[in-house]
Figure: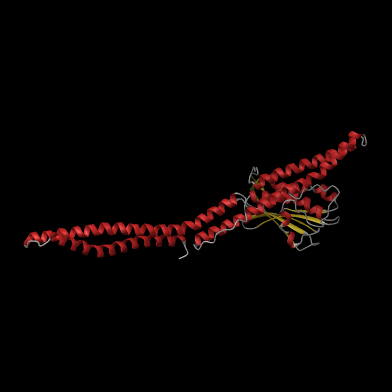
Length: 366
């Protein structure tokens, strides 16, 4: 009885039955009275066929009049019953409509009605989930604005200090000082580019140019381009592509961007003497590229949070030239998902290293 469809059917059936019952009752009560009234008006009638004909006509007239009156009364009763049934159905719908308007106006904590109908109750629950999601999105938006302002403050302060010193004659305008200004300008440019990529990823507007490639080639090339930087940091780089081809249809530059980010993070998390391993493999329908390190590792609560915007693992190692803004992994996961894949992290805990796995669908028919 709590399903809206069932209530609608029963309400219509109730209206029909009520109309028919009221009509029948009115006809049963009114027809004899009208018939008697007609006979009384006729007075003593002659016998024979004339009297029988008059009697039949009077009976038909009484029935017709009672049916008309009964139908009108039944229609009125059915209309009243329909109004009551419609009101009971429309009232919770109006409540949900008001709740939707509240969500649209930004009042995400507005109370929601609790309809008895199952479908409407499920709709109310969905609206509640939507409100929670919108509130969380708004909170993250405000946090993003604050974090962007924080990220911009440091390079702008440095630039302002150097320029003001040069204007006052405190600092010389030599290539060394101008080089420091250039470094901070590049930091701001990288931040702008990262934020632009993040915005496109969030809106599903990442530009992809997929082609048929072997994932081993894309991953291997990206890893080898970083080998010099990895070895300069005193870290050993191991690249294993595997023997079997891994045919995928992806934007090779975007996937190389993901691999570059993963290797760069692994190197920053790994002290000198450690190792970063890059390995490709496949399952029945998935090609994977795994980047593992012997560095700091991740606590269980950080395995998902590292993909959040601007999140930095507490206590992580930072180098003198640290230039990350905490959104590289966010963009990397968005790129993976834009290809129909996934990027995930695993770790045995702090101090036990971490492993990031990029999964992509294998190209069928190869």
